[in-house]
Length: 443
Image (cartoon, rainbow, N blue to C red):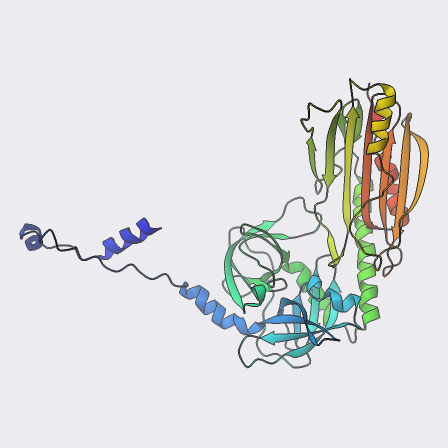
């Protein structure tokens, strides 16, 4: 960069005249006059865009009622004259789950800005969106883009990172993430904590996405504007929203989502993957990411080859509870050194009835209830443990944890586990059955 700036500075220097070329050379001790390096400034277009739009972006503050202080912050932006603003569901989730303990307010940029109370009007928990509203009308607001821009379009993300005030970050639109379970836009730009719920706009100020998450290294993600348009349209028709009504909306959306995933899975053939002497469930659908490995540990008298698949995405319910997950893993355990008895002890030690599963608290779910059986799967004797736990706030939803281990060979076997989070009991069992039916012995 320094070389480029120096070349640019020299290119702007006056061209020497013929007299200067033929005249006496400057004294060797006299330093040459070099024009000063240009000072780096914010591009005028970005500066003008920021000045025009910053008043439409607000900080969202979640207030804990007992202490009267902030418990968390995020961003939002106005999208209607009636005071509607868009943000992320995860920014305001405490109000939906614990309305008796939390409330929300928004604050505009500026030293004299006052906090204005807001209420949650509607949510889209699957796509991590929410609409909040203040009672005061709004004059300056964003327009939602009618469609996605071309890939490579320069974009500008706005929000309140780390409580530092409204900022603007340049980046690039890279289209929808391919083979994702939940729609999201790949944004090449820095989205930092506190910017969640802020807008990402084009050069003309139209919103094309809502800031939602980051993986660091200029790798950010946005909720596509299409989902925001749909939610806003629905929210503007809501006359009154109570805490119980919002909780029911979240539950209905989760039930619809798990049905959509179940229908996709059951409609697709389940490919199998060779693992030792067995075939096991492979990559069921493209949204799953699969990996395999065999650790090199020559001191062990056995080997364990693993193969695992996961959706790598989830739905945020609270800081302690995620749902909408599909994951499974297999382990092929074998030994040429251990006898049958010693291998059986090893095999038993690696198999556990602990259902595991996704993180949740006692406030969110019940304890797992498990059933252990010895069954035949494709003619293979198999030990299984199928466990279910219920969601306390969302009736009809369960987490499933399945553990199974083949028992047909004396010094080898496959152990497998399936995790489903946020499914109906019938759908979870149907998926577990299809999963187990894919096991086969090839020796």
